[in-house]
Image (cartoon, rainbow, N blue to C red):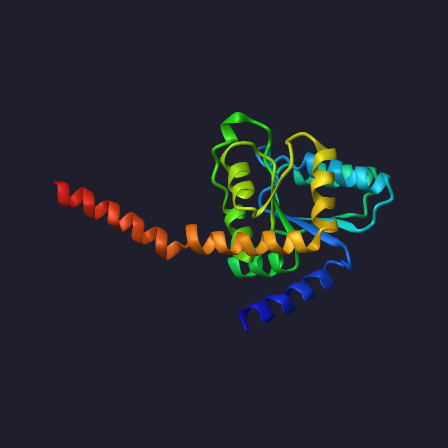
Length: 209
């Protein structure tokens, strides 16, 4: 029943955003310096230049770089990038993810960020959607080793295009990645399970004292 509700909500979200049949890659979160989405709008520009109309990038959120990104899209006439306002709660994020074919976790290419642990990636897993990540390190290893998504090299818009088109053109693979992502969320990142593990650590420390 929950999946049916999310599926219906996803269709409503796509309709509201004016999306009709495109493969939807969504980013949700802050559009700031750390989450540099230049790679995404550059990828959109490459696709638009090639006349590829089967992909839409949906960018949800706010931040100091949003106006700059919107100006870039306007300058290049990019109709394949859709901006939407920040999402207030987790339930809305679930509906947004349900409207997406893949969800992006994008960061600026800085080594200090390679060890970050972004909420948006775990929201992607929980939604059962393939993840697209652009940082080397544990994020890349996590999605590749668990076949829960794909890695696109940072600062390489052409490689992001390649990865997106791969998912779009291989729906069975994308579906399997999404299923693996959901399984990963349940088996490795379930909140109750993690809380129990933390409690066990506290109990062991207390016992030793």
